[in-house]
Length: 161
Image (cartoon, rainbow, N blue to C red; front, side, top):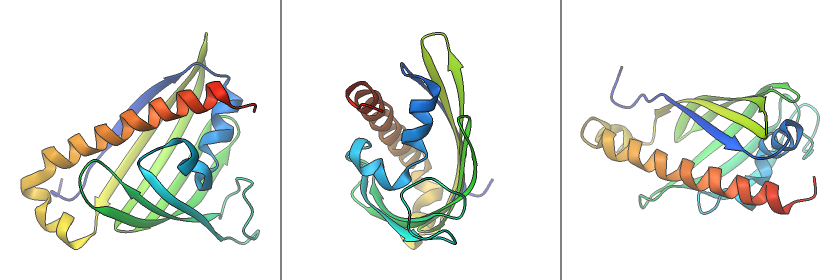
């Protein structure tokens, strides 16, 4: 695997019903509400169905994100598959090129959300530094995921879905 190619599989346990989890994860434009301080901006750019906040295949969301490391990433997320309440799949272009797939399954007291994420770093400095800094970039990913899981747990607990 090339140094600028990564693959992560993450499992989050969320003490909430699967439909509630799907409703939140499928609305990429609202990640700024709960995935802090990672998602800085998320703006719906449009789709064949228009710029609706309602999750749908073809939706495009422009994102600015960051991790613990001092750089920002700009990319557009394109929703390519939705199966309520078990699947959310996106493709991205920009500083990252990736596919991401959330699969959800009910658990006795909540939901297991699994993210299968395969980014390719295209931002020039990140691409150049990947051979040397891959362990640091992987640590940065784990930092962002820790914040995402904690933020989503709190958001689900405090929202009225």
